[in-house]
Length: 466
Image (cartoon, rainbow, N blue to C red; front, side, top):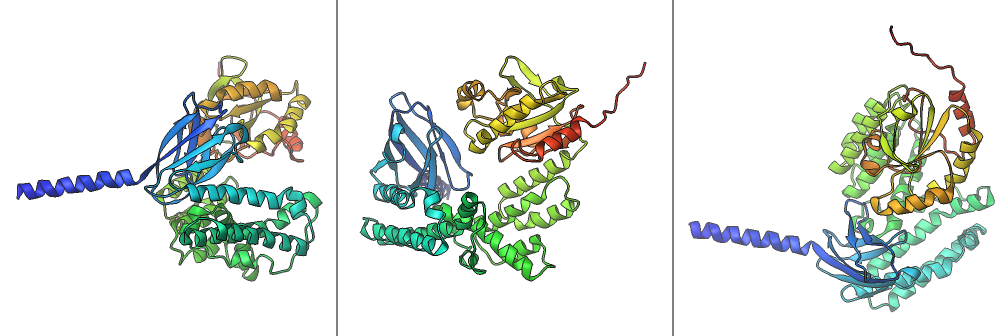
């Protein structure tokens, strides 16, 4: 009996080790002309995100956990790309950092699948060209263009060496790429023309009609994931216009009631997280209704964090303190700024929208110079980008107080304000109490009036007992 039990235990251990081995693949490569020391690999929903070292010769070897096949991401410095992984299949890439996108070449296992993806990206770029020329045209011309582009991708798929199964998969991906471009027409058109295009009343019906319960597409297609969000927006707008008594929470509950995909369910429910904010008088009831809509513990924890942050960052509450490295030397805490109105900008060197706000922020710093307000920029750059921060601060020359948060989004201050997307702007009063966790951007028309209102408001003087 003991021998049999030991045999069973041994087989169980072998099986477990085998399963662990099968869930990891080797993603290796050779990178020419790279000045970066790490390659970052992540999956479609960032539940897996890990840095792997690049040696002095440009080689890397990443042991990546792959529970389910799909398109993953890798990033070297600022450029990033997709790479297809399958369980048990190793992937190798050769790349020139000076020509990141065109130089990608895969070999070994999954070379056909990944080299096809490179060819497809190049083909789509060739057809799209300048987005302004592609999108800002009359609707019939635009619809003709995107059909021609999709058909060209279909032809590339048919001529490829992909398996029949993968050809069918890539055609489904191409269909969603087509629909995403279709959905983006109004956005690009109105941005460049400064007026909306005239669209048929049922223009967005193809987006509303997509299959929202497709786990395979969620893992393989960024366009599909974006279309899930677009489906939420268009379908909710239509449903509420048809039934004014319908709440947005009820819409989501109804929409996902028969959906099996955890990713889709959580994506729809996550759109309701914006209700966890200062000024929502029904925040407690909304929180209780939204929580059961989430399936994964990860998203439930995220909702709970946003709820707590909203309660902790209401106007008038004392802010969590910070003590960060000051670019000019030493450290600066919130207490050091007591007695000043504080306008805070949370940013990072890799954040494009953050950099776009800098010229406007620089104007504010100069306009309010000598007044009782401090403009504080807090970088949440990763430690590997610390030197980029040291270099960019004098290059941009925004002014104000430039601080570095070495813990990034994990610091107590960032967690308290539930900072996720950046740039993020907030305002604290003379005593370090919260005015708002979401201040107007420097480029907004409202920012000066907002600052002046609080700058000119009378202060309550504090007197110590003698």
